[in-house]
Length: 428
Image 1: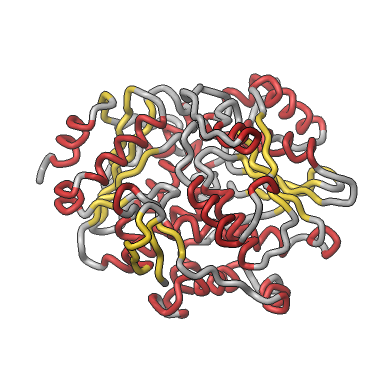
Image 2: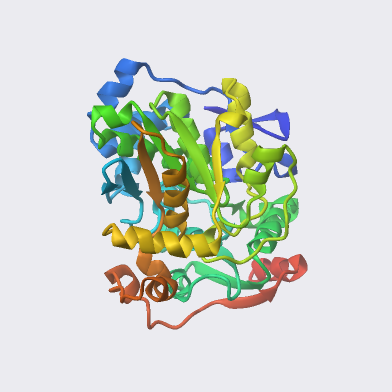
């Protein structure tokens, strides 16, 4: 598999290099040189396969012979140990539930696959994972890499801006997992990560790698659950499928579009954001004008400069698709609350991110179409806000209950690169 740097097309790397480097020169994202496509017959056959077998075939189409089919199948089997069920919500709408993994969020898929791949590629060579999180990434990465030999993980998150239970899930592990609460928002954390990856000396000294959704291995893993969703639908729904994706850093939407590029029959996508609406405004008016990030109920989507957007534009360019065919919506907090109550009345308990995707879908779904919205996190991960909005008590799933009373082990730093660098290099 060859990939190229979106900011410097002359920089071309293998899959292993892309996974190990994370980012290319000038903080450029890697993108596949070849965009494989399956025939309609292939797609029909794949939709009859089990999740792991099908996922191995999808990933093999991108990765090629860098990892043998047997080895890749073993990595996928070790990573995808939980389901991605479609739950009916209305006669024409279902939720693709991606929160049945160990950290109750969709990022378990990408995080666990990346951990398996990186361990396979690196062997005995020490690696430091540095990543920023607005909530769910941190937990998924921490649990995916926890206890793996020769891997140190440093996770930056905005102090006071993620839910207490999210924080408990990944800031109580210790061992090879180090968490840093940064005074600032998610974009400040992301900027620190990017500075670190521009620091050649640091990269070499630590064997630096990122586990954000910018890492190509995570992105490819996320393609697989779109196929799993379609496999669960009756034929009539497959023929008129609309997918609404709650969007922050836009990795999930990128993966869905890559699934469509492979030949998966998805009629159209809707990018659903909260008040951090850089992309909807861009699609409406043609101007890329990020505002300052604002805090919302759907905090994992509080991103005003989505990292994966260049990949979306590149895919549209390569496939000769038109950007104006991508649906979009902005949903404010009041509407999010009202939508969560609507879903509750329908018998489906949801959380803010999925509610935004449902609202956008319900508003834009046409007669005869079938809509899927992504449930990216278990409602109990946002227990405090969900209970107040719905006026009901949520039981804690075992994964959260086991960590709820543990002590936080985080370090605290200002949004200052020099201090982060010193922290990273201590003991070296």
